[in-house]
Amino acid sequence: MKSIILRLALLLAVAALPLFAAPAEAAKLRLCTGSPGKTYIRVGEKLAELAKQLTMGGLEIEVLPSKGSIDNLNRTLAGECDAFIAQGDAVAFFASAVDRTVADKVEVMGELYKELGLLLCRRGTGIDDLDEVGNGTVAAGSMGSGSLATMLVLKTIAPDLYGDIQIYPANGFEGALAVLEGKADCVFDVIAPQSDLVRTLNDNPRTGAQLYFAEIDNGDLEDFEVDGKQIYEIVTFDDELYDNLSTFGDPETLAISAVLGVSKAFLETAPEARSALAMLLLMGSKDIETVAYGERRPFEK
Image (cartoon, rainbow, N blue to C red; front, side, top):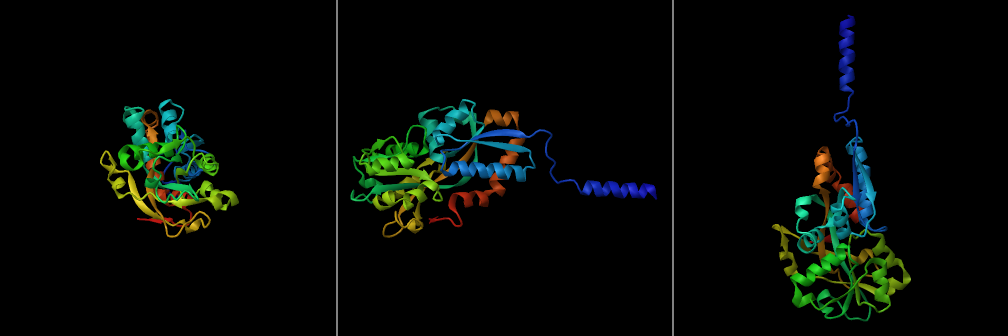
């Protein structure tokens, strides 16, 4: 009788064990994200939260602020970060113009969500599309930002349309201020629509009254590929979410993949992190998109 009771107790104890046991020591990953107030940091924080829930403490993510996609790649190669969030075209730009060995040192795990290349111009410029800027000036970001990388890629692959555009080295709030002060005609930022930046520019009386959404609608941009993968997609953006910045009709603009990349050196020292990160991308996709888009995706093909 005692033997039967012991066996039953053992079976109950085994049944009570979790399906996935946490490792004795968690893998600790330093994730480079983006500037305060932008979506990369909030997505990074969501990934850290999901890691605690889904890996049972097997992966700990430390979220680090940065200047953006290019800065993230530089810092990852320098060993200051183990992983990064970046635009897909910024990774391609980095590999072609900064460090051709980057593909040997980092691995892109997959897409987190789609970002939008949003163009805001000053009222009175008459600019309705990026290809109407001519030799005017666009505030497109400082060195280290993915927005600047995108603008440089556009100037390279479509020189007839964008080659004469002058670049002012700022974006975000600083870029918007440059437009208001007449230092630039438009500000260009690659950003998630559910962004503190766009909401603030819309709600601020000064920027909301002087800025408006313009388009980037060159369908040929969709032909640009890296390693056989499409980088850009032309989508229609529901700008009515931002009533002060909106114009008549929903503008077309670029959708760009925001991806999660990891140092191959880190994966060699913590091989279990690969499956943990893959699980985060798969099981956390809805939570990540909610951070980036809000309750619904505000654009469509």
